[in-house]
Length: 339
Image 1 (cartoon, rainbow, N blue to C red):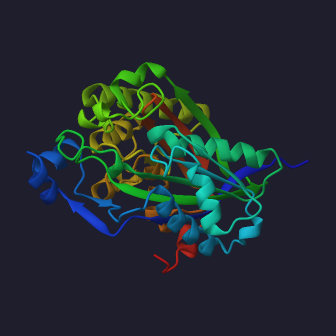
Image 2: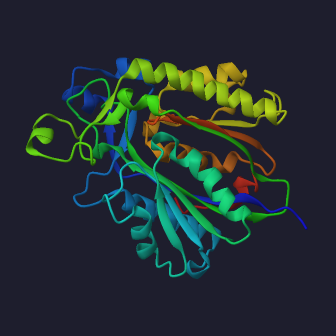
């Protein structure tokens, strides 16, 4: 019996229309374009600023484009998984809202929360559902409305984040392509350095938590930076060695877009030149679970069947890892004018 693997067969994406520039941020807090570009590498970020719209809106836009591009029938979708840290509500899941908006009648759906590593974890999770032989068409969405948890009076973190979502279709294949290997790790010791203090069951919302700005993202930047560089680099090296991948046969590194210096450090460790690294942080900032699939969306037309891709990310939890994907189709042939 032929071995079933899971392969990505299409990509869709969405970023909101409103663009928050460094110039505008410099009017909110004591910073400037040079400082932001030097320290983080972000020029602009898209913000979902319309009243009453959340992550499911961006996820729906991305998934709808994905279904159009892949010619998918809503009745054929078996499963929807959304990776997000900014769900529309505590419950129900953002994935369940997405099913309703897309008219999916035969899918089950759930959310996955691994912060900025969300899409990385999605790749392995979705692949295993496909490998089980029970599921044939899965939509995986990574997206976050980070502006909903950013304190725009806090100069260290507010320039980093943006809003956006992207989706991929995952299907079975017997070819030598798809999700080939994964190294995923979690270390709960990261809690003090990256979290949102209030809003959960430990510290429910109250007048005190709101008055004391406890519903915003907190990040101890220096510590997170150090752990991100070492753990992403180590995971990439380990997966490359395990699969006989070298700087010569790695076609693309797809790193989480949190900080340009982290991206450069990981590429340097792998001895991979920058032209083989997907980078769009300058235009989008850190969209958390959205960064990896948005890279695919941006660079799809450069991808060729058989390309060796290494995805890597690091996020709150701490969560991190690397996933090796052998790309399944020629992107240039499938990219349309739908954007």
